[in-house]
Image (tube, chains in turn yellow, purple):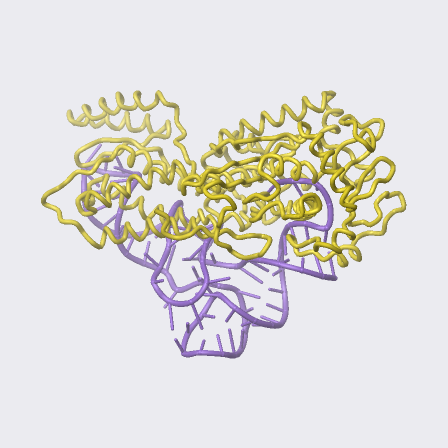
Length: 497
RNA sequence: GGUCGAGUGGCCGAGUGGCUAGGCAGAGGUCUGCAAAACCUCGUACAUCGGUUCGAAUCCGUUCUCGACCUCCA
């Protein structure tokens, strides 16, 4: 059924490449998850949703995906590496909790948000603290390869030595010589031989809370090691897709590539995918800048820049209307427009699910209509196959929706499409919303029955030409965000946009 | 400073050489007791200057503006 091959933009080659899994039909996908020391924000939502759609679409195409997304529950060091503080430990001290209590709390919170956003759960969600032995083993391997050195109980990756064998910086377009000249002077305190080296194992200071025994010291693993340990454990040394935010490209993913090559002499991933950032007023939103909006705040409308609350599906739709490699600017206006767009799409989904083909012997098939639907359907999948261009796909989806709406309201007879095309249009629309975009209706289930009762009364009042009553019901429902739709031969409802 | 990317109609946002993106807002129309929804029609958009080409938002160069990465960040 695949009309066009799937192409993926590979950061490694800076080109779109045909997607050819290493072991079809299996696909291994690893995505960098959150560091759990705070509530998830819009940026986390973007990464999670983007790769959720990648996962969903691969599944839709028939691939057997193993999706691994880690939880980082050892805080990467803040500030200068040598005197830095562990983020989770810092938070734990502040709140007088066990570090594990902190990471558990925010991991739970993250999961709650991701569920609201209707992202499919990863098949494996490993934690860094659960893979300390694997990480120690990796350090040993890299030492054995002669690409790391130990100083005072800490172990560092020797980037210069590695660079002689295999170029460091291929992913992010860095050149080691330039990194060397561009980096700050060593302050003399550093144990690193070169400023570009990075830690594989750090000896813990006495007040450090999270520490483990190792051949070198009581300490903790370096901050790029966990992903190498967990991806190789669950997906092998060479797997299909590695994803994450653009901000992780350097140094995090660069280090992963170096570590992977040092240990197993192969690049960890075949395709590297990076989603772009969300901006607020044109500026990157991020923890370090303190200008982020958490998802809880967004869903509750509880933040000074928010004019109102925005539902999880509004956020999901908003994120999918931009291509994942473009920056996406947050604004109330954009979110409000997104909410309307989402409602329009989901109203179409509601009616499409209820529609069946009705032959009208008076009406002939209209090749022009059929052609338009066929073109839109094809274009929609072509867009998805072109590096997961959900924004463009949604554009085509709206064109399909117009046909569905027209058929639903009786402005076009279903017969103009013919049974075959009609059924395909309806089925594809529903499946695309459900399985690929992952959009769901936001309503309590009991509401449906209740509405049916009210609409019956409405219809009766109308029959009796009791227009005062008709208006009253309509207004009452409107206050609840429900629109009454009068048509030639039926009455239905829709979410107010 | 180095590296990379971006500037599209009132707003958001696709689009890499010719073929209507789409959504929101706005105007007109069909339908309707009225309205809403839905459907139809409407915008002569592509930062600037120059170049390549039969033809450029799309390729090349100039200028301006903005952003990201280079330190933890999705």
